[in-house]
Each structure stands twice: as structure tokens, then as C-alpha cells.
Length: 232
Image 1 (cartoon, rainbow, N blue to C red):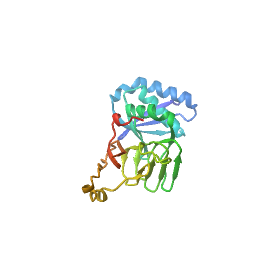
Image 2: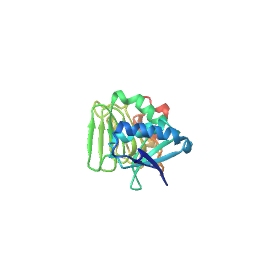
Image 3: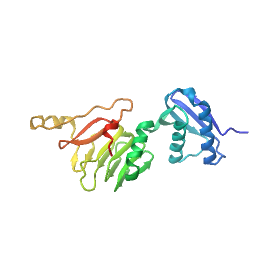
């Protein structure tokens, strides 16, 4: 008899082989049972995960990830596909905090955007995935990216809300706007130092390092994303 779920070890973490003939609710229960049994083996490991065998929707992938984290000590930091990072996730306390703060005021978009995509929402937006160069997103409220933000993002887009913010695991773009205020590249802002301009930007690390862009003293600044700043 084919097992419901098998766990294989990979260099980036774990690979789940799932029984394609099961219903998803039964598969979810099997995954929960499997990780209740073996999850302590990983001892608070921060790992990647990949799937095989069952054609999962984005929602089902994240439901499985949430179930695994709830029933083990594992922290899953990304979804892998063919050896590459396909989706980056903010997990554990950070994800729970963001969901608690914005779920009632935001639209969740599951999956990475593609270059050329242009999406907009009247409310805030939470993207489970990456926003690459050439992709654009606008939201009436905050923009939260569970991945790398490399494209254009405009928070507080409708009504010029300068109290909105943009947060992501990594921000690798100068194309940011909050309300009516554009992000200014460092070399341009340095010319305004004698005018009392305030600017702060940290270069993203090679590893994921959550960052937040917000308005301070009339300028868009960027700084490490902490729980204290996530007051939505």
C-alpha cells in the first residue's frame, strides 16, 4: 500500500512525497500525524521544503506548511522547486503577527508575480511570493511581501496615505512610493543633506532580511522590519 506521505532529506531541508490518490483533507491529516511523530527530530531547524506527487494549489501548499509548523518545531523559510527558491515565506511569529494585523484589511495574493504583471487593490495587499523587476503592485493600504520585492510597489496609492508602509523579506528596488512620496535613491538624496533631508537605506543582505519602507519627516526611509514597527 502506498504511503500517504514520505519525508526525504535534501540539502535545503525536506522533500515531501505525497499520495496523489488521497483527498486533500485526508492528506493534511496524514501530514499532521507524520510530523507529530517525527517533527522533533529537526529541533527548531529553519529549512526549505519541496513537494512531489500531489498537484497542490498555492493555498494548499501554505496550509500544509502551517500544519507542519503547528505540529513540530520546524520553521519553513522557503518553498523549493527543481533546486531553486520558488517562494519565500515569512513564518512563525512574523507571519502570525502580519496575519493578525492585516487579514481583515488586506487581500492575500498567493504566488509570485511575473515581469509585466500589474496588480492593484483598493485595500492593503499581502503577497505570498516574490515581486520581480518589471512587475508592479499598488494598494490602498500597506503592502506586505512574503518574499523578495524587486519591482515597483506603491502603498497608500488611493488617497495619498503617507501612513502606509511597504514590508518584505528583502527589498531590492528603488521603485517605491508611499502616498504621494517617491523613494529617492541614495545618491540623489545625499545632495539634499544641507536642506535637512532624512534618508536611511540598508543594502539587502544576501540572505532574507525583513525590511520596511515608511515615511518619516517627509521622506521614505528603509530599516529592518521589527514587530514594534508592524503596528497596522
